[in-house]
Image 1 (cartoon, rainbow, N blue to C red):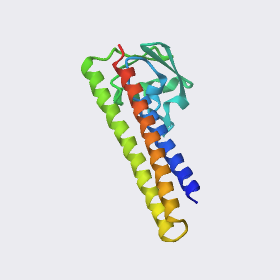
Image 2 (cartoon, helix red, strand yellow):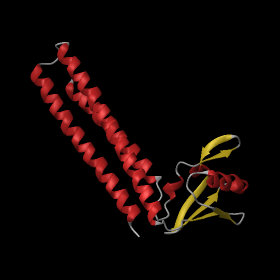
Image 3 (cartoon, rainbow, N blue to C red):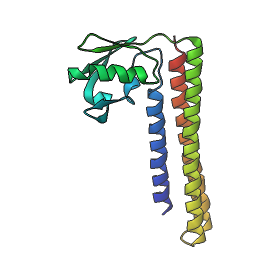
Length: 185
């Protein structure tokens, strides 16, 4: 019973870590990465559609992203969406492809992005702690209902704490990696 509960907790913590990694991938570094555009959605025949479903996105070098729409009539919509996004990039097109030049980041901008990384990391840690709290309550309820012994409850809590600590350290590592990426010149 406790094993299933801990397994479920681990799955929830794993998804919190994956969510953090997705969030961090969308934060710009000085390097071009197609993941920057993962959250961009474009109006396609009246339906908001992820950019990577209406165009291929590539990074031919470290400072350029090239977006080649499958339907050339989408160029204007793609440009407009990128311009109005919070990426701070200006699209250029030649009628066939959209090019996004990724400028090098200023020191101030890098520091802003690092603060954003810290915020996302803290949100992920809070999510993991909330999962721990929920599971601790579940384990306590099992003991109250006499489904498990008091020793099993304490063992389950100890295992849960070890699980929480391991995911917290994975979250920290992920944040440090992204911070290093941003501060790299």
